[in-house]
Amino acid sequence: MDFDPITRPLTDAEARAEAQRIIEANFRPETPVRHIPTSFRDDTPLPDYGTTPPVHQDDRRIVPAWAAGIAVASIGVGAGITGIGCGAWLVLQGLASVTLYGVLMVTLPFAGLAMVATAIGGAISKARSAVTKNVYEAPAVQNTQINNTSHQRGMFSRTRNDIR
Image 1 (cartoon, helix red, strand yellow):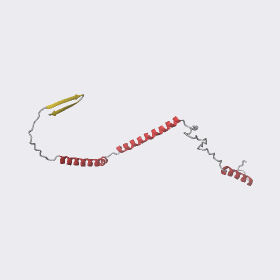
Image 2 (tube, one colour):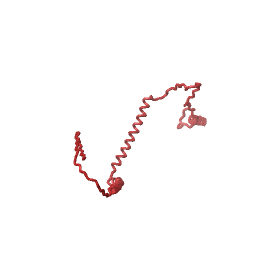
Image 3 (spheres, rainbow, N blue to C red):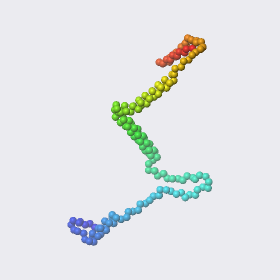
Image 4 (tube, rainbow, N blue to C red):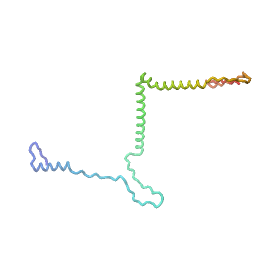
């Protein structure tokens, strides 16, 4: 039913029919969605003993196996490269913002630890070198025989002096 509302208004019967058509077109119930089962029940009887024989399952993949493997590998490589890139960016950002005060503040605890370690080492060294007087009551023998060996290989050499 064609009408032109500008040239003539609708009659009551035409308006009722047009309203009914609009309501039916826009508010009708949707067609039900057909549900596809996602599982399969195998009702074949099981053997009395032993393992169950395998059941054939159709392969309905859309993508071939080699393409899926390449996709997974490329995702892994991309994630790894992204992680390396983020790490490099963080390191370079840190190096770009280095100031003298920043370097001094970072190295100050290490310098303090080195100073404490040196002081402890000096104290232990002084404690070990206690003064002792050894009195020898046997005759002293002076041996003046010197065994000198020298080895040269390439551009390195080694000389060893043994006093016996």
